[in-house]
Length: 311
Image (cartoon, rainbow, N blue to C red; front, side, top):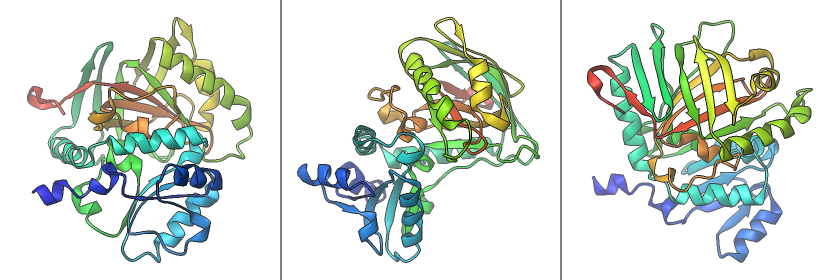
C-alpha cells in the first residue's frame, strides 16, 4: 500500500521537469534551481513532468508530443485560459506541491461508489443549502488510481473533482440543482479568445472575482438557473448573463471538490485552475467557447448522501 500511496512523491518533492512555452519562466525557474525546459525545444515529454501552458499553441504542442512519449507521467495546467502570468505559474506549482493526490483520488472513488446508489443528495454548509437531483443515466466524470499508473497526460483538474457537465444545450442536463450557495471565489475561463465580447467583459469579471474574494457573495439557483448573485449587497446577474454568452444563466456544471490540503492556503484572488478542486462544491455557467465558463466555488461544504453519509 505504501508504494501505491507514494506514486505522486515526484510532485510533492518537486522532482518533476517543469515544461512551459515561456522563455522568461524557464529562466526564472532555472535561477531557482528548478529543472525546466521549453516545450518548443522538445520532441517527447520527460518521464515525469508538469506542463504549464502560457498559450493555446503550447497546449496543442503538449498533447501532440505526448502521443510519441512512450513512458510519461504528466500533469497539465492550462494557465492560458485562466491567467497567463509568472505569479500564477508559481502559485499553481506551490499548490501542486502541497496537494495530496493519492487521498484525492481515493475520495473520488468513495464518492463514485455513493453516486452509484443514489439519484439525489443534499449539500450543506455555512450559508449553503441545496439539493441535487440526478437524471436517469447521468454519468459523473472522475478519475481513479488505474488512470494514473503509467503513461498518461491529464489535466490537473481531473485529479481533484467529481463533476457532472452539461456539454450540449440540445441535450437534457444530467442534473438539477436548487439551492443557496455561499461563494468564496469565482473562476473565469475563456477558450475562444476570438469571442467578440471577451475583451470587453474580461476586466469586469476580474473586478467581480476580486470583490468575491474580499466580501461575502451569495448565489441563488432555482431549477438549474441562476436567479441571483450578490456581492456585498450588489446584484451581478446582468453581468453574468452577458459573460456566459449563448448558455446564459443556466448551469453547465456541478462538481464536488476533493483537494482538502489547499483549503487553508488557497488565494481566491488568483484566477487559477488549481482553485477549482478545493474541497467542497462548485457550480458553473457558460461553456468557455460561446462565452466565458464561470465557476462559483463554495469550500468546506458537506455533501450528504442517503442515510446521512457525507462525502
